[in-house]
Image (cartoon, rainbow, N blue to C red):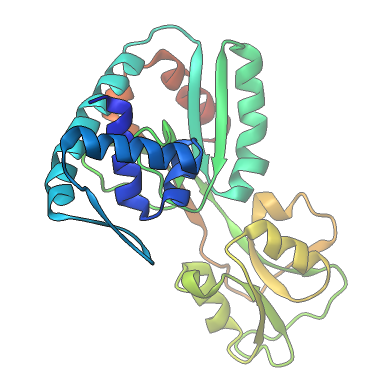
Length: 282
């Protein structure tokens, strides 16, 4: 039994279909199927029940899953320890952040860092998912909520102020009303965000015309004159077609937290990047 086959088993167990598991593992679907059958044959047990909806763990599969996850944790801990002990400013760093923050705030900082340390390769993942630091889906994660995972070391990197914006030359709504105005805000899943709640409180009679979890999409629609949006000020400052609107009370800003797994605290390249980010943005 090989560790690579155990990873195939875990991918199918977590994703439920060969196609999704193959995409995650970076192999073809036929290869995934062949290796899974070979694993089951080597164990003389059926690990999955094949159904029209996908793969469902059998009783043997459930028992195997617990052991496979323990093996995975040990393998990942080994990888983190090896990466964390590296004192050389070379190798790969995976950084995760939101889309606008990655493009407009991190990219210039990363470019300067990489010019100073050409041996370091950086992957920037602009993803709304909360990537798992223990599984090394990312080495450094930046997000607007503090981390609650016990093995994650964190610090507040910076505070980002927000403001209300509309297209330059557009009408200014009346605070506490907003009748006739249209709003560009977060999509339904994120309308509990503080800035989205502030917008509906300040302009209760305005109509929501567009929703998106992308701040850049909101900013683009705002610049086109389709409505008003609460945007991060560093993002809006880069768009000349926007004007800020004062309703007498500023919207709440957001703190940006950075986090990394404690096993990576001795990684020279990660420490150097964190210090560089703190100096540039903190």
